[in-house]
Length: 510
Image 1 (tube, one colour):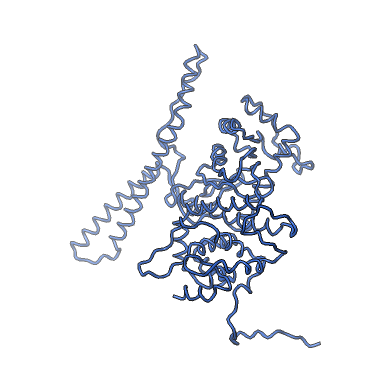
Image 2 (cartoon, rainbow, N blue to C red; image 1 turned 120 degrees about the horizontal axis):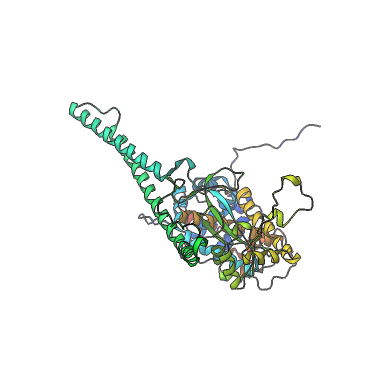
């Protein structure tokens, strides 16, 4: 039988203009993102102001573009711009307009505070949809690479040595430049540029020294209260029972303390003893463990460990999301003061004193018995003993088992599925905004998935107007078409609907 092949004719023009929405799958996330953002109050967002009085891209379109691109692993502003040409769903989202990468980057950089507000609005939407029931929360952190090289770190002592070397080099180059001027010779080595380059490096090193001195003083201040307490306890003892003299906190940078010349707020961190050190930030997340697996709070810390992060993570959960009853954390969050502070407010904390593999032991352990480190530890702190007793009950163990089933998959999706493994911006404030945007994209993706997985006949009482209309599986397009007339296309209220297609093209045809 002869083969019948479809003719790929790329030269025949289309007789009628195509509808972009017909090229997008009915169950695509883009519909949910557009409709969700359109119902948000975006007056706090800043748009790019130009002196030419050109029509600007609306905040709703730009925010939808960022959320959808982040949810699909497109993080660079240049790749966002390329997606407006190559990706059909992104092209539909932008109504066949193409904001340049500089516009996208500036909009993202200047609206991180407004993005954090939208993060809360998505959680409120989830509560209205009855998909979020905050009660039990899982908290954990993950290391995400900073936009800096670990080889750009310098210690206080080495920075001082390099500053002296640079001063000598600059003095030598200045002498050479003066001699060349006296002889009237051309400067083949471009001495002025070389001098400027060395002076800029010298300024960076001196700034790194000042930062290390400030960190050392701040650390000494934090340790001073503990030092004074130990001194009082020692003075209260008599004779040889006093023990050794208590050393005061050191106010000078230590030999191992360093500062990065590219991103001074990032730190050298590693995931475990088996991993290599990387220039990173510690991204924290509190995740709903009652079924939705939505991120309730997203923080960024510069501390390599999680010992002091528990209380801040729980406090960052907005009250609008619901009341937290229990918190599940791993042994890295074992901090007696913070645990007792939360439990005094009625929030039960479940924190094992040993590794999670020992607390939730597998029935069939693969490691040989002689290679397991299971030496018992005699804990003396009262709060540790109470925690061990609490986690010994079958109910607590079943509850604690939710931790690895909730927060760990969230990090896996963000880092492996979405591909968010490194920050693009520098500085803790900007990195915090970028992490909030990544978690906002994850929550939008997760919320859409929860709604799509709901049974068609499930009761929808109390749901917001956004999703209240009856639907059948994979009927997103019909549902959107029924609501399209509510969104006239204009610079202030943008929506790529069928009815507003011609007007939207006219508005953005400049």
